[in-house]
Image (cartoon, rainbow, N blue to C red; front, side):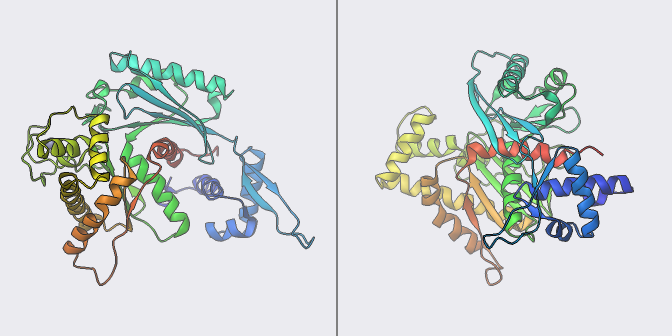
Length: 397
Ligand SMILES: [Zn+2]
């Protein structure tokens, strides 16, 4: 619920309760601090906090300062007030399943082999059983679930809920996975989104805590595919069909590679993990499968400062810089995050990314580009699933 959706006094109440819970996710606060952030009177903040205590969301604590004097009472969010389930279906043959508490802390996380599943139905049924098993193990009742957040490497279409554009996990491509999940958990809301969309939500929220003026962020996920997540003016960009911000098929590549979409020069064919390897082995006149081992060979060649590998860093760093420059001209974000592969490779690409960005910027006298590497992209998808759930969840009225 955003401010614009608040029409009635009951809505205002729920909206403010949600905002208090949201604020307290990042640490305890006094009545006065909460009132200031909500722009309400201390009495209103106090009354809302008391309701939230009764409903089991908060507790209050008053501590003594080191000098023995009383310091104001603080309110804290109860870690066991609610949980969300994160289901990461981005990778082929492996699901990552986690329980995250209302504070956004990962309580438990498991990577489970799913290669025996031969259809989307089998995968969802297997995932549902795994979710039930995990909840049982952690003794969490379904009634405490705020929702289930699912990450996919493609897009869930808005009208028919079919997953499209999902190359990394072909089993769920062109399939509806929502129906099966909702049937297994009829009382729990299910949210599905692209991994880059979920990642950008987490980093955007973190940045906003440090600087409340931050309203825009972009995340470029470079994995088996290429994904982009965009928060513009505080909103996640989804577009009319659920494919807003998808840039993996813009044709700015240089090597004339054919893409599975039928076009040539799609950016994904050149800067995805496979794209890097394809270029490298082509330049080395080598034949090798494009997989984890191929990536290791490339990384080793960069470490050994081999010319072919280094010129590839320049070529792809420039291409990534070019891509970010297009995104910057549309969205003007404070920070452009990159994640999905190794930090070591990012460090090699970084000077070329920045050189291209600065070359193409006409505002270099006004601001400097912030391009940062997301070190925690494995956990970030899990946290992103939770963030997706939390953004839509509302406390009881
Ligand atoms: Zn394409």
